[in-house]
Image 1 (cartoon, helix red, strand yellow):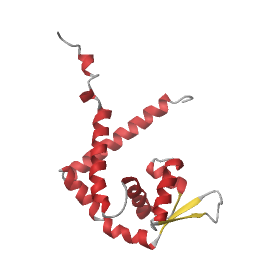
Image 2 (image 1 turned 120 degrees about the vertical axis):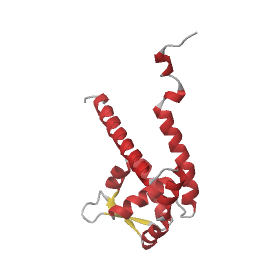
Image 3 (image 1 turned 180 degrees about the vertical axis):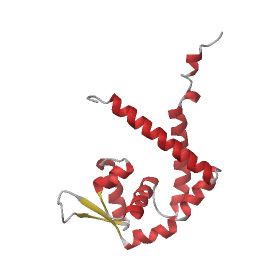
Image 4 (image 1 turned 90 degrees about the horizontal axis):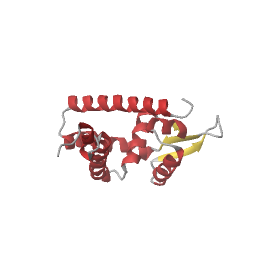
Length: 156
């Protein structure tokens, strides 16, 4: 019995989404171990990365950087605030906006976090050029999928 070439497209091992999801879950496991010493979860680490890079930001802008909605971001910020790493304050310029600021402890944590990218790179077994290439390809994939989603959106 032979199968048609299109039938192979429905095999689990042929699904790019499954490969990306499996890689994401594997990364999550490695990050869980690496970030344990910092007392951060992976999503909290991403918030800290943006704040270390950008400085104080409105919650809305922080969410845009992370591609997270406020319903997902708010609990993360609440836990980071309880840990003493960030402060949330109403903007003096716009009462509707909440600014997120690093505390001294949050700023100091950056030094300890410097080892995280190296440990993650070691876990991948990829060299720096391979990591850059993979990131570039994933960025291209994300842009293509964002574009396709916009084209499919109602009213687009």
